[in-house]
Image 1 (cartoon, rainbow, N blue to C red):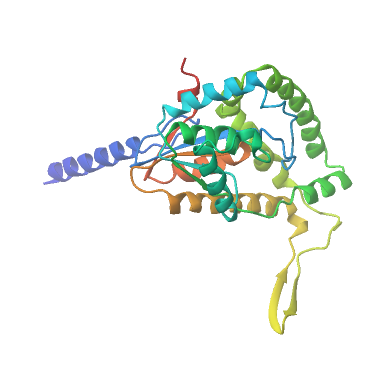
Image 2 (cartoon, rainbow, N blue to C red):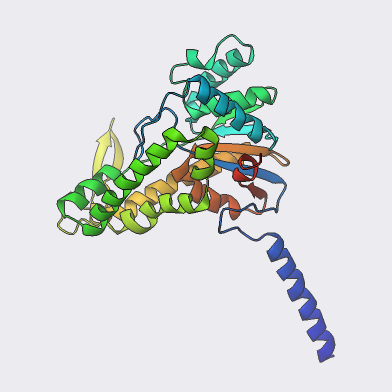
Length: 309
């Protein structure tokens, strides 16, 4: 009786181990196969350099003939992924604008250089690839959030926090090296570099290892408080941020923004969809984690396609 029970438990254990292995989450950015929805996270540096990131790089003119040829090459290789939808880093409120421009572009009634801000990767990769794939959907799935970086910078500078200032100095040197590389390399080479897992985790290190430690120990900014106010006669509770623990709030707000983006992915993805998600590199670590934790999704690395000759 005991032997039979042991055999049964062993079979169940091996079965669960097999299932766990088949749904193993990649911690290195490699492809993971599990569910019936497939997602590719394409991390990008912003082609039009809007200056909204913590660290910004200068980008050359992507309408130059050389760059346009390189972008065609990128589109051709990503086309092999056969996405059914493309998700982009624009706010959903801009969806009517995207639809209008995209329809004009599909009908050859407008070119990318006629679009205001047309160097943006949404147009240069998203529109270009969408047209190659017979006009598949391009959906805006971004979400606004509270960016508390300037507060963390101010507090860290005022308190002369060595670890924060040292990180900034190190990052400035890295930016100079990367900027030189971005100018010299092809778009494909730059995207392969940007989507290298080591580079994704290095970018993530700002949130995970640096910003989160910032605390307003000298109470430079006003501390957490709640105030009751009225708006049009109705009670309203206004909460300021906990500046004493500004680093935790900064990371929490960033993670929250990515949670909303993740929810937008879930709401727009159907069974058997293959979605290409084009977002700034700093989003990729959290989105990778969230999608990896969802057994309905396969995750595919863009470098599986970009590195192919």
